[in-house]
Image (cartoon, rainbow, N blue to C red; front, side, top):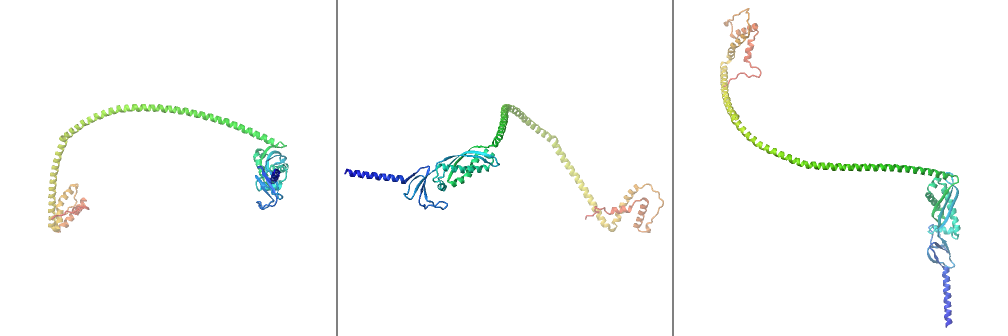
Amino acid sequence: MFSFFFVLLSASGVSLFAINLIIQNLLYICKPNEVLIFAGPKQKKKLPDGRQVGYRLVKGGRAFRTPLYEKAFRMDLTNTIIELQVNNAYSKGGIPLSVEGIANIKVAGEEPTIHNAIERLLGKTPKEIEKIAQETLEGNLRGVLASLTPQQINEDKLAFAKSLLEEAEEDLQKLGLTLDNLQIQNISDNVNYLNSLGRKQQAELQRDARTAEAQTRAESMIKAAENERKTALKQLETQIAIAQADAEKRIQNALTQREAVIAEERGIIEAEVARTEAEIAVQQARIKQVEQQLQADVIAPADAQREQAIAQAQGSASKIVEDGKAKAEGIRSLGASWIAAGSQARDIFLFQKLDGLIKTMAATVPSVEVEKVTFINASDGNLAAQLALFLEQVRQTTGLDVAGAVGNLGNPKPGEKPPTTSK
């Protein structure tokens, strides 16, 4: 019985040992800094370019290898430091330069670049991979140096390293490598070109330093002047504030005195107003007295004289009216007599006026010597013809046109009305 159990335990131990041995040979655990490649039959999964590969990848975790069908490989993904050194590499312009730098590279762990690493670097040692990367980077470094001038390379090493990264990225991707970092440590030449540039830059730096120092001194002087200006302004502002306070004080004093002066003047004015009002009352009484005096002495006699003048004017007007009526009545009687005389009225009227007219004309005639006297017999012709002949002789002797004057008496002038008779 005991032997049976012993045999059973022995068989179990052998089985466990066999299982452990199988697991150790078939189970692979992938470290974080590596990738497992199980090479074997072609996988159904295709690459982005359409290819089918005969391996499968495991990155992180664990996986079993199919016995007899697959073979497992490990590819390290850790960084590798590569020292770069290029001597007598001609830059743009024909100046030979020597460049020293350090690059950090590693095998790409992401698709699709990792497939290039598997095809080109699987099975190679780290030293071989390092040498391939170093030669590739040195070739790219020479290409970048040929496209830049020494001034550009020396003045901006970061831009130079960036250009080198851009230049080497495509070539490293084809190899399945990734460039993490690149630093340029030293750039030199054998013809002292960079030293000349350094001296020039040093001179420019000294010039810039002196310029900055002069600017600093100027700014300091400007600042000092500005401070003095601000101090002077503060003093002026203080003086202005003092002057304003003094002026305000004077204004307040003046206002106070003004109230007193106003009160005093108001009292004087009020007294004057009261006196004036009293004087006005007296003057009003005097005015009433003068008005009454004027009424008695001037206005009443003037009213009496006015009434008397009106009465006298009315009496004169009555006399004028009566005279006018008498004259109108005489003219009316003359008109009636004229109408009653008929056709002889004109001659009668002229003979009535002739006596006065002849006297007037004789008074104006000087002494006349009579050369010829003609006697007219009334019985020889009609009276009118004899009168006309007499008047013609008077006109020729004295120059007086009696007939014309008499005719004018009977004919009214333009604008005058002939005498009319009223019935």
